[in-house]
Image 1: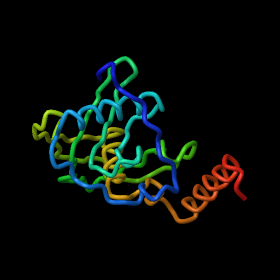
Image 2: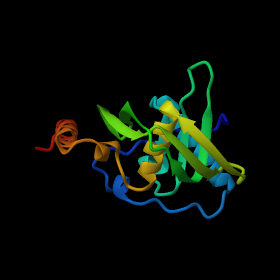
Image 3: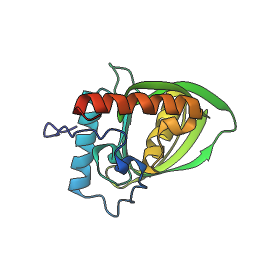
Image 4: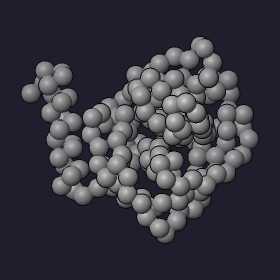
Length: 176
């Protein structure tokens, strides 16, 4: 990460950009690389383990992920990521989202995922992930498709989280 990284405000639910399908990145330029650095800095500062460009009000197919330990960063910068296979085996992990602050829920997803993407230098990459990294990749790619983690839980739980978020929003803005 460069020392010139900038923090970018994170968009919160119910902002409509979170429900849009993000556009593919046509060319990896210095501007895209800077944006990936800024996204990583924003994610670490939040703190979070993943951030998709729509969460900073940029409807492009860019994702940064780091599920490594505090001592060992494992930063992935993904341009135009695409899931190429999902396991039949399922796993349940507690998920949260920087765009839905202070709310978590158990989410069931495929336990293993393979993803194809371009790295920040434009080189094609593929990787297979399990566990937390697999869930994080699916969560962030969902963001690129206008899907939130609450879309994967029961309607009752989703409605409860949505009501809490909207109440917080009303309280913070003074709108009734």
